[in-house]
Image (cartoon, rainbow, N blue to C red; front, side, top):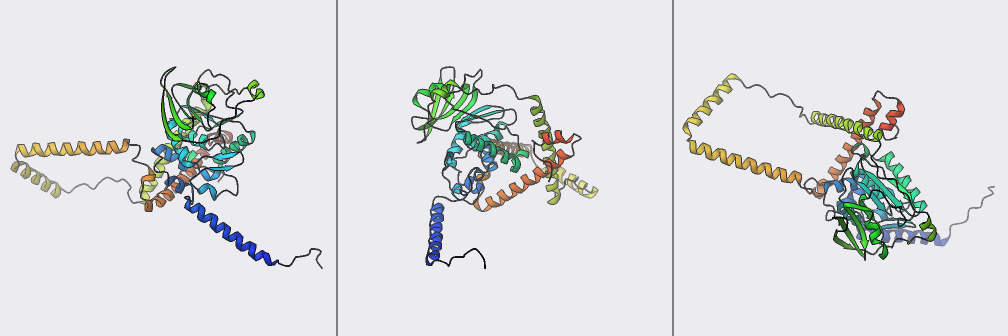
Length: 411
């Protein structure tokens, strides 16, 4: 006889199971009403009114928001709203969209993220700043800093975007952001993810260099402050917010301020690696283009030479037309042709220069999923080709691994 006793099923077990199913269905219905999305791409698709530039759209699609939540919250994060679990917090997607747009990040700039949290925003910023930029984050809670470092490691391991674009890895500092030692050089861009205490506005402004931008909540309003001169600022308010206020430093924290790395140029070996990867990326993209042309039967070949009869017929037709037409009609046709050509060129130029023109988010809804799948497949193929190209380099294994951003070269 077994020493373990299996209890008889309780009459309430079926009722408890039924209630659990009903509660789950009610919860899912509630989430659907709030805008539940199946994946990260669908979340971004709902942000058309907040994403204005294709570059911001690109990084939002490249960094999966759903990877930054703790286990058990995968359903809730698909809702287009904020998420919180203990000390971990993600703002609503549209807030991050507005912040990224108003920061106006560019390659090579220096960026400071006050209250960097899970590292989600800093990772997206790193994909715009590139290897020549500087990407710092300050977080007061040690466990949250550990979580952010863990997520950066996971991003390196799983992201295919790293093989398609340059990246500035975030560096996180633990401590109170209101206790930063004075800097020799200020930052180009600063973002504060919590409400600023009333007495610290000038403190945050001191972290921004002339010509730089500070995005910060002041007096319940999320604002963009642009430093026009040593003592002059222009401001732009774009949202009312109710965020928790930064913790005023204790006496112990004030006695041991944070020392951030000085904003010095990036080390030569990292710039060299970026140059090598850029050259390899161009070669891989050409190979992909050639492969697509072959698949679609559009391999570039010289056109067949015209026969002698066809050439003579064309010349005689041309001579008869030129004889029968007057100079005025020729000039009018040429002027209208040139005007139409210039018009079409200006139209295509304006479209290509417009930040709205190449957004995938503008694709019709029925075609968007096809575009997402196609883009994902192309990135995966590109990543595989990049790994193969690194593997074929005539370098020692350790140098190959360095060129591959420290990632394994094994398939």
